[in-house]
Image (cartoon, rainbow, N blue to C red; front, side, top):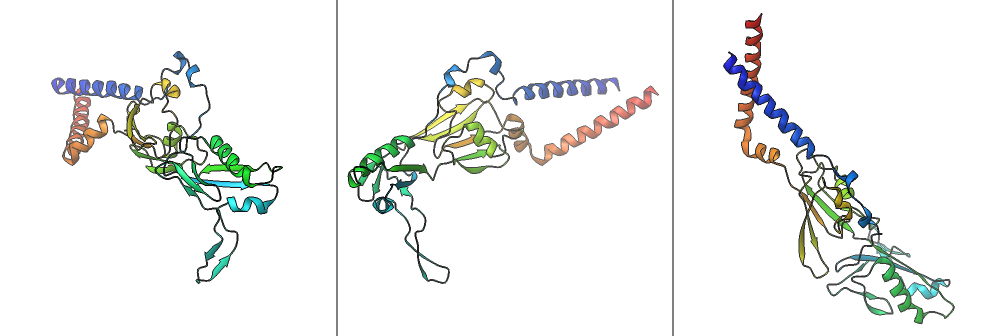
Length: 266
């Protein structure tokens, strides 16, 4: 009986050691107290890319002069097919593959690569010649199609809208319910497409606090974040039902052996 009991003890110790090792892989920012985050200083500004949708408004003291620059839905159809004539909502501008938008009155404007503030300033300068000299128009630009996709070993894989035009990779993961216990935190894959359509792949280690200073800490439009399953999940998937039954058998055998040992001792 002792020969049977010893392997059981060894197996238990191995499982406990593996559990301790796995726990170390779960914690984010493990070295945050020993590094400098000075390099992370700076405010993030998203840049406009081809296929972005922009909502643009121009406001002047005389509404009639700024109206031609605001692309709105004037006429809409109701559910019964009747024509409604109202101000309606603003139509978004789709940035073409060359990075341009076709702006009312002004014509083609190249906006790709600009930040929100830079785009507002550029459009302001473009519309000024069409207004009175005393006018100082207010231009507002927002990216209405900003979103990222989070998939893999997260609680709720989804497409995440970025309404503030600024979101870190950690915030995107949190929006998807964070990583499951089976997700690899040291090898998160980020697939990014640049303004030329070139795809890039980057590996992120969430265990390392240096990620806060990484150029990929903040997500970009249309980023795809994939969380890879760890070895435990991969093995479990490969093992299948037969191994699950085997572990159940081993568990029962362990319980019986423990019971027999107690009986012999008594």
